Length: 308
Ligand SMILES: Cc1cc2nc3c(=O)[nH]c(=O)nc-3n(C[C@H](O)[C@H](O)[C@H](O)COP(=O)(O)OP(=O)(O)OC[C@H]3O[C@@H](n4cnc5c(N)ncnc54)[C@H](O)[C@@H]3O)c2cc1C
Picture: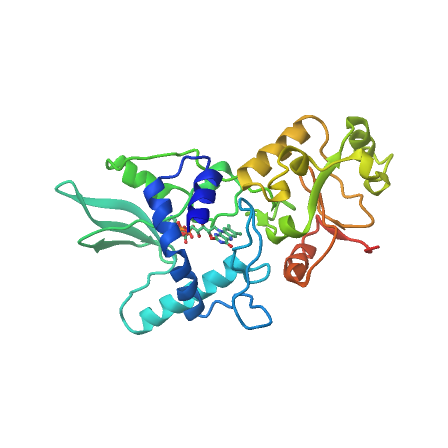
């Protein structure tokens, strides 16, 4: 528990509220048990026990996972549990509705005005208490992995009625996020973070090499180990490629700003990932990464070539 608390505080740039993080560490094991009970198919070892893997921001293997689809499997488990409550009439669900205003009575939130997005009708909902769980607001920055509905309007309405607004810049730039693949794409794609465990990130050490690759005069695969800069392993030897996400993203931006970035895929011996910042070569594969690779193959930005 101490380790989870410590890593989360440190990985959160010492900006998290310690009491909340402590509570998170206390209840995290029970949350995994609850997810299992809800049907989340976490990976298991050959003895049948829940398996663990390494993850960004921690130096011990303690992350429960479901191959490269943990987040989606958690969602499916949550949807199932919610639907069970809906069928038991404990929860009433209003899909395709957007909250457009908060109703205040004597300085207290007592309801919301919602828009039916199918009919356009405005509806009133009264309540003893109002909880807004409207998520982050990455779409404020145009493209994001957030749901398209996560557009800060709900939080903004609450703020206009006096709710305090903290940390508006607390937005994550994810180190395994793929750039937009075309104009038809309204959201960004997140590659499985398991690629950070199983792969190594590098850029050409010399700017001239990066320039030559960008101009098609050289192939990245021609660069030997002595001409590669595994910048995360160099800068953060204790964590390597598994530094916390913000640290990894900042370091990638730094090497690209310095001219070492490789926007074009040119790596015949690797799975090739076209990334705006830096390049990621996945050297060896474990079965656990299979799903994420299948998933990334669909993107036109990604080319698969023969493994050596
Ligand atoms: C690709 C991806 C993978 C992830 N993988 C993991 C993982 O493996 N493990 C992990 O712990 N975390 C993971 N995360 C992070 C985690 O999913 C999020 O931190 C978490 O879902 C946020 O929960 P939330 O309830 O605060 O908001 P959200 O899940 O974003 O929910 C907010 C909801 O509110 C709705 N909404 C917004 N505004 C309005 C409005 N005005 N009216 C009505 N509805 C509105 C939105 O449509 C949305 O459905 C992942 C995130 C992404 C994008």
